[in-house]
Structures are given as C-alpha cells and as structure tokens.
Image (cartoon, rainbow, N blue to C red; front, side, top):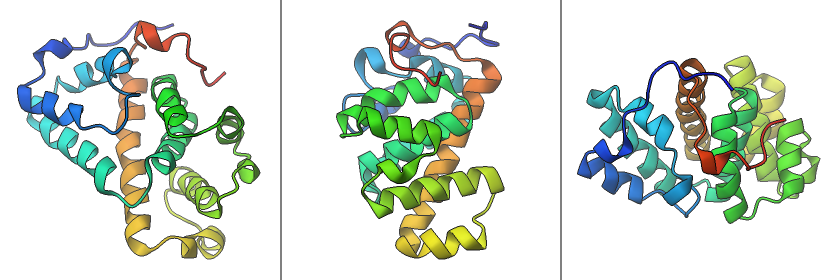
Length: 189
C-alpha cells in the first residue's frame, strides 16, 4: 500500500449542510463505518466547490432514472476502468445491498456482460466502457446500445461516469488510503 500524498481533513470538520447532504445518500453502504471518509476528507481541501459537488452528487443519485442497482454497476465498472480500489471496495457493499451478485461483479471485472439478463444493464456497461475508453460512443455501440436508453437517461449516464472520473482520479492521484473496514472487502485483484 502506498502512502497518501495529502492527509485527508477530519470528517468531523464537515459543515452541517455537507453532513445533511451526505445523510441523503441512498442505502446504507456508504454510511457509518463504510463512509468514504478519506476521499471526502481529501475533497474537503477544496471547500469552495465541495458543497456544490456533494449536493449535485447526492441529488443526482436520488433523482436520476437509473436505479441504484444500475448506478452501482456503472460505478463498479468505473472502479475497474480507473483501477481504483477505493471506488471498487466502497461500492461492493452498496452493490450487494441493491442486489448485485458475486457472479455479476465477476462480469463487471472481466467485461463479461453476458451474465446480465437485463439488456438495459448490458447497454449501460458497454456504453460506460465506450465513454471511458473512447471518450465518446462509437457508431457501432451507439447503434447497438444507444437506442435502448432515452435521451435523459443517456445524459444521466454521462453525468454519473463524470462524477466517478472525479472520484477515481482523486483517489489515484492523491493515493487516498482505504479505511480499515474496507480492507477485507473483495478487491479488484
């Protein structure tokens, strides 16, 4: 394990309005002992934008047309694509909470999307790969999968991918340390 490049600020220093925002995160998986305190503590070094980002992040998770399960599949894939143990391990419990199985997690890890029964879930994962790897969606993927998602859902997918680019790159650049409760959770390797 590498040494973090900056020390996260203590989560106890969160402004009350930021705490209230964090409390609205769907499910239990990112709360309590599983809270991503080190990445939030790292992001707290930019207080002028943190509150606005947290509000957008949490509100988007609540109102987008993607179910929490679908969001978690995309987020797990972002962890894989950005080689972010932090993103991956923090979202394994959330994904499990919303019904993602071990076999489906294997599929996300290996880009073996045949394990998914839902054509929509397969589309979301393929399109996530396209957005990250190509920085666009190629014509073949658009023809095969893009038509399966309404315009608003496609825009939400792009927004979700963008949010987790921020999280994954922040974790990778600053070498954000995993919190102790995350260490026994299944990793990328």
